[in-house]
Length: 246
Ligand code: ARG
Image 1: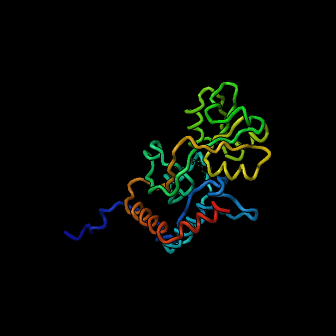
Image 2: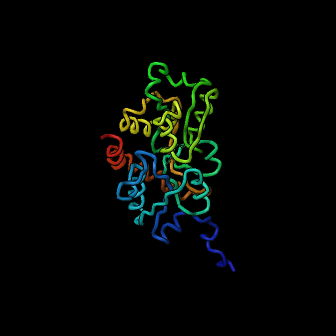
Image 3: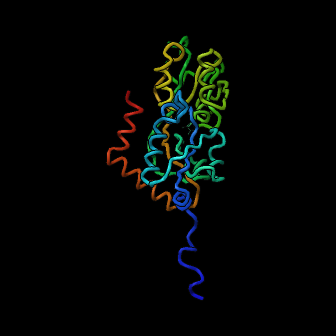
């Protein structure tokens, strides 16, 4: 009678179990977030997050399986098991943290603005953009959208499904500014010198973290120890330098 329940049957399921059983680490991200995740010309997923995810899968001795997902539905995708983890430049916010667990911060960023070149001189600080005469753009469901509402309540805000569509508004002259994460804006500005100007003073603090389903201390413990390891053994710096120092 005493052997009816083994000690193990009391433990909740961890994502680790299905990762090891399937030999696959399924990773959700939304390609189009430079230089974290994007699609190469020949259709492969590349970027800082992608390299980290591949390295993580290797450390578990399983296959990396990319799950490219619309940003809007990325937390539901995790919750319904379409992936084991979100490695997608996701900011650790209180609202998100009520739905998912986050591993420790793997990089810190902030919001900045890309403005129309003809606003140069008129708009010298992000603060100048809180004016009813300005139209801003950002991506739906992002901290950029959140920050735009908070810091520029007087401006008109137009939101788009993808960051590419949102930033194009500025290049096309339909918006005066695009509010988004600093690394994205810095890279975009360096590639589009004629169509946007980067106000590179960030006005928010955002820690980015890997998200997993709730009630999974085993996986969380694995991820936090893995992060310490790669930060100390040089792998993190090698991957970081590859994508952030060109
Ligand atoms: N860091 C921002 C956020 O958490 C934007 C991230 C967008 N990431 C992406 N893979 N498209 O909302």
